[in-house]
Image 1: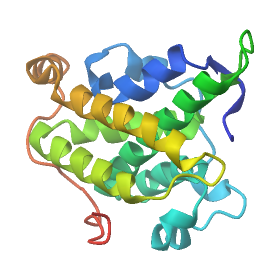
Image 2: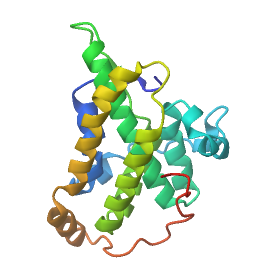
Image 3: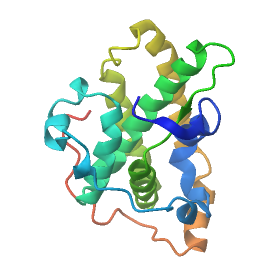
Image 4: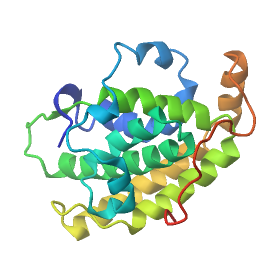
Length: 208
């Protein structure tokens, strides 16, 4: 996986980040804590062609979805960035659940969430939660779409299916929790509440 390196412990902080990321806007301190440096642009990723990936996402390594989120956010396609952030977080949650279950006892693995994804994903989430109803609609659409993508070739289909249902349910639950708290937090911090602004290109009709 592309996340390997000095990062977060598998099954601990990382799993919590992936599942709770859809309600991260509740964490007032995260915005400043998430900006230790400026990441390189997504275009700097070697051999990355966003248009080719979006034309056939079923053929792409799921790790590239992280770069896709960053690239879409950088070019102003915010709704698409939020959609693919949801797809990536869901797939990553399934993969990490499988790895956590199958690793040898005492074998601590660490993974690092790419900085570009942490920043662009957080920004996409903050932007999307200005309209919680729309955000929930897009999350559900992303989950439905992700469920139709084939499992990565290096994960057995039965094992993938066993974990995928749980992660998707956790994602739905996360979006349904604390709607009043999200709105109160946005009001307290002076964030915009209302219909999405500057959404960029609409979601592709094939993404259903």
